[in-house]
Length: 428
Image 1 (cartoon, rainbow, N blue to C red):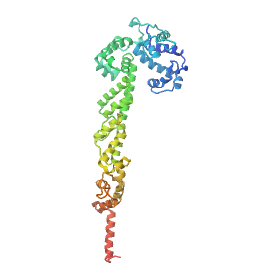
Image 2: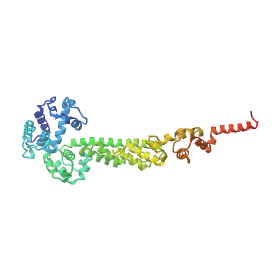
Image 3: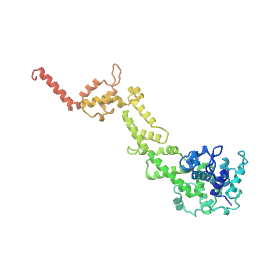
Image 4: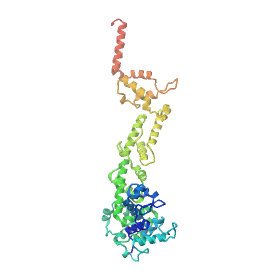
C-alpha cells in the first residue's frame, strides 16, 4: 500500500515531535515538524506569502501544517513518499542512505516515518494498489478541455510535443505520481529544465487544481506588476506577455526583479505618453530637462525609462545624461551645473528683469526664450566672462519692439517729452 501525502505529513509530525506544535528543542528546531529557526522566515514566505518569526510560527499550528504541506508536497511530487522523508531529514532523497545525525540514520528515520504513516517502507507491487489520492484523476481530455482546465499552460504544453504526449497519457491512463515522474525523467526536457519548473509540471499533471491556483495567482501578480511598471502594449500582445511572465513566476520562481528586467523592454512611449511608474519617470525627466534648458529625444526617454523599469538603470542616470547634454550646450556653466545649479537657476536674473521691463509674467519665461538664451550664451570679448551684464541686457530689452507696447515705454516717453518741453520753457 502506497503512502499518501497526508499520511506522510502525519508520519513526519509523529516522528519529529509526537504531534507537539509548541516544542522547541535545544538546537533551535521548532514545532510539530521541527523546522530550524533559520528556515522559518523563507519557508513561511514561500508557503504563506508572508514571513513569520519563529515565535509566530511556533504559536500557529495552522502555519506549521501549511509549511509542512508545501515543502513535503514538493518533495513528495519529486521523489515519492520515502524520498520526501529522506529529504526532510537529510536534504537528500536517498532513503537507503546510512548517513546519520549522530543518533539516527536516514534509512532508519525513513522506516520509522513509513511505519507511523501506516504503510510499508517497500514499493507497491502494482500501480492498481496505489491510493486514489496519488493518482491523476482527470478524465480523458481534448485540446479545448485542456485550454479551459489549464489556461495559459495549454500553450506551453502544445509547444512541447514530447511533454504533451506524456501529460495526456498520464491523464487518460490514470497514472500514479511515480509512474508519471519515471516517464518524465527520461525526456530531454527534464534534463534541460530547472528543478522548480519540473516540480510545477509534475503538480500540473497530478494536482491540477493546485497548479491552476498557482498560475492564477501568478497571472494576477504579473498583471499588477507590469501595469505598475507602465507596460502599455496592445491587448493581445499584453495577454501573451502576461502569460509568459506568469508561467515563469509559477514554474521557474521568477522574482519581481526578474519580471522587471524582462518586462522593462515592453515599456513604450506612445503619442508622448507612458503609463504607470514609467509615466512618472518620464514626466520627471521632462521637467528636469526643461530646468536644464535642453530638449531630449523621444528615443532617449524611452531607452532611459526602460532601463529604470528593468533595473538596469536609475533616475539618477537619466539626470546625469541630461546634465551632460546641458554642459555640452552651455559649456561656460559646466562648473555651476556640476555644483547642482540648473540653467533655469542661472537664467533667473534675466527672467526677472525681462518680466519687469517687458511687463510679462515671469512664470511664462524660461531659458528656452531666444532673448534669454542669447543673454546666457553671450561672452564678454575682453574679460571672457559668460553671461550678458544685466545693465546691458536691460538696454537690449528697451530696444525690443515689444517694449514700445508697455506702460514702461509710455511713461518713459512721456517723461522725456516733458523734460524737453521744460527745457524750452513750454511747461513748468
